[in-house]
Image (cartoon, rainbow, N blue to C red; front, side, top):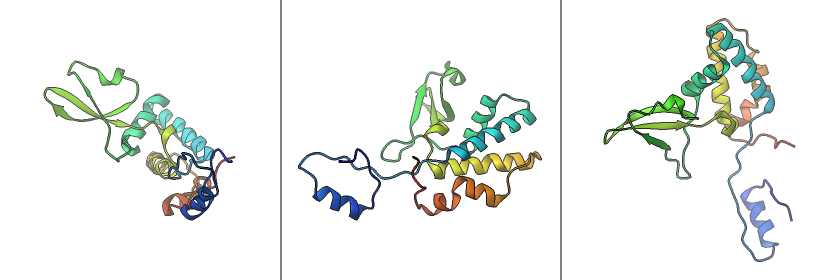
Length: 165
C-alpha cells in the first residue's frame, strides 16, 4: 500500500474501493515550487539587497510584505495575532502586517514564510522581486526562461507541477 499518492478523484476512489476497511486521509494536491526558482529568487534577492543597501533578511521581509501571502486557517480565514500596545512586533519571530486595533490591543495579520508557499504563491513572489529588480536596473532572465524555470504555465492554469523526486 502506498504511503502517499497523487491521483484524480476517480482514480483515488477506485484505489480506495480495493483497500481493506479502515480510515484513510485524503488531501487536495498542492504542487511544490521548483527549487531552481527558489535559488533564482535568493540570487535576485541578494542583488536587490545590495543595491538597496539593506540586509538579505530585511529585503526578504520587504518582498513578503509587498508580494507575500497571508497565513490562513483551513476555512480560508486570515490568521491574526493580538498584542499589547507596548509590544514591538518587529522583535517577534515571523512576518506581520498591522491590521487594526481592537479593545485597545493591536491586531496583525500573519504573513506566511515563503517556505510554506506552493508554486502559484511562489510565482507571485518571484514576479514581484523580478519587477523590483527591473525597476532598479538589475538584470533578470528573459521572460520565457523564467516561465520554464518556474513552471509558470502549470502554476497559473492549476495543472500540477511534476512532483519532486
